[in-house]
Each structure stands twice: as structure tokens, then as C-alpha cells.
Length: 87
Length: 228
Image (cartoon, rainbow over all chains, first blue to last red; front, side, top):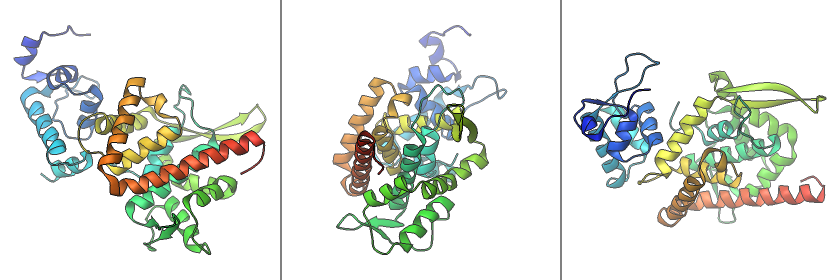
């Protein structure tokens, strides 16, 4: 298991793990995992068995957008998935 | 997995045992009846059937749903002489074992074909041959993650997810998948949604009431040693 990185290091990293993304976004681990599997969150994975790395800025921007669509526009997750898949 | 997958199939996956048999699930008769109840809810949500003022089920769209299991139910509804309440329909499925089993198998078949559900032959008390269903952990996880993402985060909830949460609550299956804290949060969110999204929820409330009544009927008949 890799060593836990400090928040300063995470904030300066281009790529972050899902646990680090949980720390940065304040969202649930399961929610981020679901968004990833639903194709809402971009990630890089060297091999199917290796850890997924998320582009920090892009992933956080996407999470902000999902949050806005849910809370301000009142879209359900299904509608958000459909919206992004059309783009 | 299709995100808008039929409620009945989502329920079948969550009410099935896990391959390790660690998650205890419902007795097959109840599980099958609830899965059929979920198919009724699906058809209500799709606008194939509706509940009239007297609470009786009425077929609106006669063209079929495209799903073998749901179409079997729809055929039965169309052939019925006079409309019945949801409670009556569910009771009839509960008591008619042959019909219940065939409809349940038709509802579960697409999952078996996709390899997300397995049939396992076993013997009750080493004597009576029986079949039980095992769902893959991956298939279950995906549904639970979606429920968490919708019900435990801020924002609107789709009708299917809400109905699924209610069904799991009635069947006391929530505890297998959610912590005590999450269950409390989830129930609070459902109460909040009841107040906010009243129109669509009227249907779901009626269904929940019907399922509650059936649950009561089953429990009382079991206590009296009779058959429903």
C-alpha cells in the first residue's frame, strides 16, 4: 500500500486517487465510484488491475458541474448521465 | 448496466443471496411476490397501467412493455373480468404458486442470460429439491452505489430509486446494504421527498401501502397457520 500523501502534495498533484478526491470534494467514496463507473468522471488507468488516477482539476470541475446540475437545475443522475453522453 | 433498468430486476438482484451466502435474504415466496410487485410499480411508472379513484388497476397502454415478465402480468390484467386493487392482484400472485413462479422466472431470465444472476439447485433438509438465486457482488454493488449517490447526497431522486428504497425498507433488506446511520439518512430523505414531490409520489405511496397490507396479510396467515 502506498504512503498517504499530505494535503499540500495532493493540491499540487496533477493526478489524484479516489480517496484523495474524496478528501478534496467532500463527497462519498461510493458516490465517486458510481460516477466513475457511469462514465461521469474522467480517469487514467495503466492497466485494468491498477489504481485509477483522476486528473485533479478536471475531475473537481466535473463534480462541481454535477452538483450544480443536481441542486440548481434539479436534474436526476440519470438525466445528467444522458446529458453528458450527448456532449 | 442500463441505469434505468427495471425496478423488478434491481429488486431481484438485491433480494438474492450473494455467492458466499453471507447475505441472508427473503424466503422465495415473499421475494417472488415482491419482485412481481416491483414489476407492477415499473408499469405504473412507465404509464402502462394506472390506479383509478377506487385504487383499482386499469390498463392504459395495451401494446405491451417489451419485457416478457411484465407482459405476462399485463396479459393477466387485460384478461381479468373486472378491475382489482393492487392488494388483490398481489394476493392472487402470492397464493397461485404456478403463476408466481413463472412470472418471476420470466422477470429474472434477462439477468441469468447476462450472467448477473445464477440459479443454484439445492435440497431443503437434504430431501426436497429447490432452486435459489445468487447475484454477483458486482451487480449488487452498482445498484447500491447509485442509491447512495442519489439518496445520500443532495439533489433530486429518480422515481425508480425511491421506489426501490421503499421496497427494500418494507422487506427489511436495507440493513444488509446500509449502515444504521445511512438507513436513518435514507429514511429522512424519503420523508422529505414525500413532502416535496407529491404528485408522482402518490402512486408510490399507494403501492407502498398495498405492499404493507400484503406483508400484514402474509404475516397474519402464517401466524394462524392458514394459507392466504
